[in-house]
Length: 326
Image (cartoon, rainbow, N blue to C red; front, top):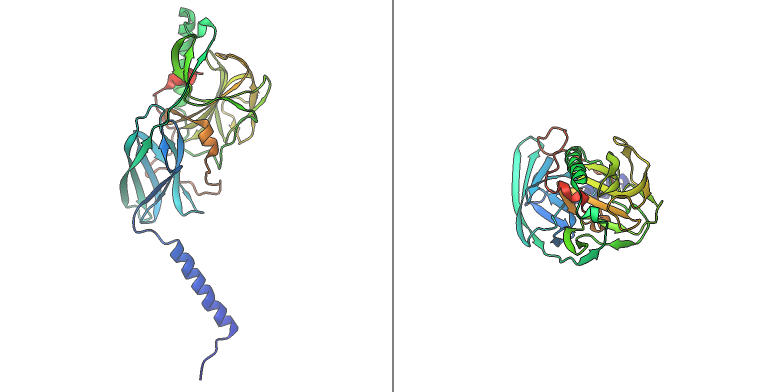
């Protein structure tokens, strides 16, 4: 005689089968899995790094091209993720990524894999500015030197905690007038590479924070004009230049979309506009590419670097002067 299951027992069997299938789908992989978004890394561009380890980890950190990478765990994808990038003058080729983590039992684990960088060309543009901005006198040089020291200290104050959450958004709803990476020829002489993004923002346009963070600087500078620097944690900052008015102060916590100031033409500017810059671990990255990245939502579970104590990060001394290159 065939034995029939009661309805409750049948439901229980089906539930166990579903739970088993779910556990198998989230099973720990047998090898390290590393991927980037976008898949192709290019000079001057930010990207998201996703890592899945063959063992359960309680913390993960890494290094690449001489810079620290800080990971957080995303429950939705059961993987570790980090925001990182490639400096503008990086040569194409393969660069080793080193990962170090700690298991749930505290045991150290490590892994290394090469990531390849492709080359992206950038155009040139000629600009006319006041003579004092290309050949400053002794008094202005003294001011510029003092401001370089100030910026060096500001850039060393990044929090060890990730303060940004989810996608980054544009600070203004205006068209872009000059892209990142363009070689700047001022008054017939090559001076800099454009390490930010320019928006055609009429004087008085509202400028908002691209993501949550802490205001590290809100003051007038020689090249940058009225400038706001927002720290998003772990060496990541956004800079807003040439403002006509400030609407925040140093030390203030801000959220994505919060008013920072009004656009203007202060500092070395050929007319009213907003210059947005993205700084990560001492280098500048293309803001337009950052705004296009699909980043994990705010409910992701964040974790500090393996074995690290929360303290201010030294986000790199290189290119402190690059903030004044707009």
